[in-house]
Length: 120
Image 1 (cartoon, one colour):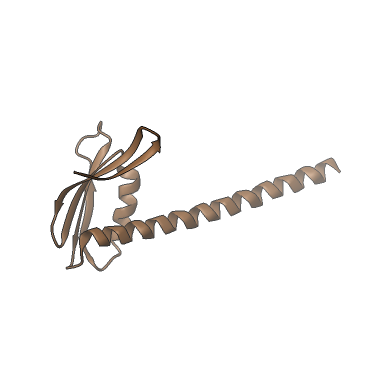
Image 2 (tube, rainbow, N blue to C red; image 1 turned 180 degrees about the vertical axis):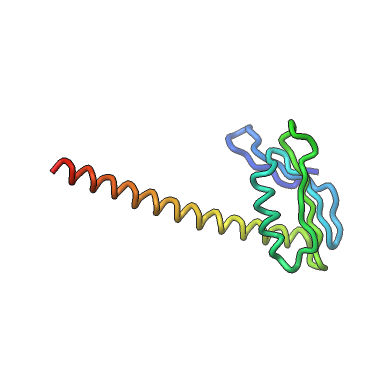
């Protein structure tokens, strides 16, 4: 059962998520189209959450573009807990993107000023 499917372009599947196991305190999903990049960030973020007893992932085969993520909570609904972790990770990405954009603009302005001073 695929619960989420992310599309890059029309008809081009980027990533999908399939529920493998779900209980009141445990969720195991398979993520196709993703391995270490995103899941490592989610796990690192989740390790700081006191509501999470265990969070981890593994890649069943190095040549397949998929991984399995398991989250076990301390009584909190695991799907909601995962959603919260995804939102935190997304906010951190947005902050990073904003800082990078600002740094690039400062760098570009600095180079423009250097070129203006050299040409004067």
